[in-house]
Amino acid sequence: MIQASTLAPRVDGIFWMLTGLSVAIMLLVGLLILIFSFRYRRGSKAKRGPVPEKLSGEIEIGWTVATLFVFVFVFWFAAALDTEQFEIPKDAMEIHVVAKQWMWKLEHPNGAREINALHVPVGVPVKLVMTSQDVIHSFFVPAFRTKQDVLPGRYVQAWFQASKVGTYHLFCTEYCGTDHSRMIGGIIVQSPADYARWSSGQPQGDSLADQGAGLFVAMGCTGCHGGSAVVRAPSLAGLYGRAVPVGDGRFVTADEGYLRDSILLPQKDIVAGYAPVMPSYQGVASEDDVVKLVAYLKSGKVK
Image 1 (spheres, rainbow, N blue to C red):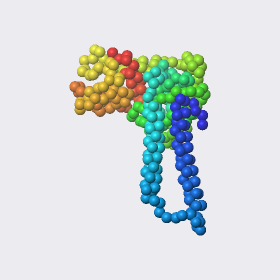
Image 2 (cartoon, rainbow, N blue to C red):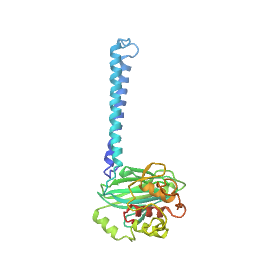
Image 3 (tube, rainbow, N blue to C red):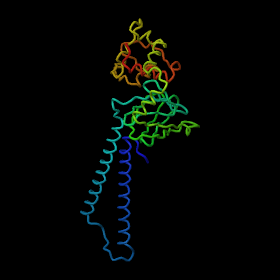
Image 4 (cartoon, rainbow, N blue to C red):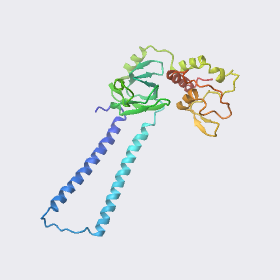
């Protein structure tokens, strides 16, 4: 299978290492079975009797230590690779993804939108911030060896860096309803020049953050969180990424999930020292609206 991302060769390395190890063990066991079957066949004059106690103990200890060593090595190798998958480069291009029955809605930072398709430049790390509008989906690009479940009510992240120009299949690998098999798309990897031409030709509206700023005003958020608000509410300026003290003494990090919950489930983690007066925007703000509002709160443009 084609390897079209920086992650693919390493995932394949684990696969072939495990396959080779399994085959080697299978051949070793099979060879021993054949040797002993021939040597101790009925009528042979091979010496029979119990294995000397000292030899038996050494073999058992050696086999156990060798097995433990192989297990620890495989665990270390696979865990190191898996951990690296979650280390998203800071300069990654951020794409917002909303999954729903049965399509992928993708939005670029400049406001360009795509359905069931994503154009990206080759050699550039791409960060996906994903959520689902209805049920559990799973974002899977086989050529990139990238797979991430997309959950309703939560933000999840994944990233990839395409290494080859081309068009690659995008699937949903979580059965999500009757037309699950139709939830397919493509990742179009272009050279930087081609991507720049494609991007400049797209109808570009306001960025996600700018759209979120408009919603922030339209939904009346400035009435409580604005600089001239009369209602006592916590300031949202510079909130993203900070540790926020909540009423029960805990500190929670103001990441995408916290911001989303604060909009839709405002009673979940109330900031210490403030009354639980904020209404829920569940059913008022759509999933797209929440994505834009969160992008605005992350942008550093809140005053």
